[in-house]
Length: 486
Image 1 (cartoon, rainbow, N blue to C red):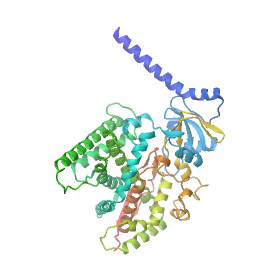
Image 2: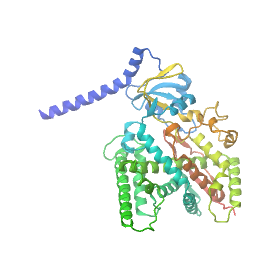
Image 3: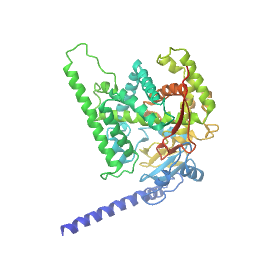
Image 4: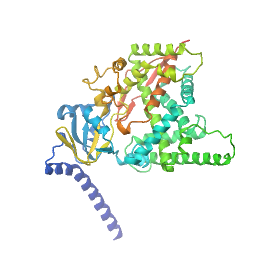
């Protein structure tokens, strides 16, 4: 009898869940028809699944992909769909995208799928909203500002660059994405936790972090053994490691509190420990967010720049000349300084163009907090909204020869106002990535040494693919020729 009752409960539970999913698919459209409110044109696709699978179909990251191209040509740049189990407005319109980003917290708020929350944690700045996000972001902006003001920051990046490139001297080929990730991880773990590559804690964090990254882009099934379940456990282990580091530093601080000559560390964690506005869990999540942003996004940016430079010999030659001129004004092994970085004008054009063509961040998830009127149609309250940044980046009406890698286009743009709507590689508004300038700095220093020490070529069958996260199919193999410029 008890067994029959159990299976009856399970059956009713499954039926209720299925009914809820079906209602979630059809009810929003029914309510809109009853209210007489005209949403954008579009289609919800299959019941339950909607159009998610078609939306996520892999395509070159320097293209919109078949799904967006088809829907934009059929319905216009703004259309309705059903994605990630939610009714959704998809925007490939630069004006609406800008409007969404500028009204964060007023008309729209961040709203990633719940499984993302399960991996990142409820205290992550990436999923936090309202006052919590504002508080976390203020700390992030302050930390970035403090970091940029420290002279050792540049020297740490440059030393790591030289170490990575030195390991290539006797190699004819490298898998560049792996090398770029090694570089960015070594930089960020030093800046955030004060750890060097050869410390046991660094190796342990990297192993868990790689597991975490694989789960972040996997099917969100919390079943033992799945990438998602392993990622959730890996995050817990990283949290435990960070908490242990915090406790060790507090113990050391207590032991040396009477010593006036005690020298403090200069990493993120040391500064965070003195921030009273964050809880312990928020500090740990902040560390994980910093590792995530400094590792994956920056390494992908550098990979994009190296990939597109291989396709543009004229851009590569001009970049070499710029860095040769900077190097001529320095002693043989003298490190770069901020004045040198300010001279890298064409380098910044290359980085911007790599971001525009490669589309490191293709779209973000938002939710309408109330009914929003835009032009002649309504964005209903509670619906998800997906502003697609790559649409503006690849729009030929905004960028001449939009599918071509052409860094010189940025020489004609004189003001930030000209770019804020048509170029949003790191988001915008109050959720713009606070560490984006640090990522560009790392890329510039890496390119400074790379172009003066190596020639390289890529393989024709490798290119960046959006899944919708961006990844090179084969990890970007580079064929190298070591040719240092004296």
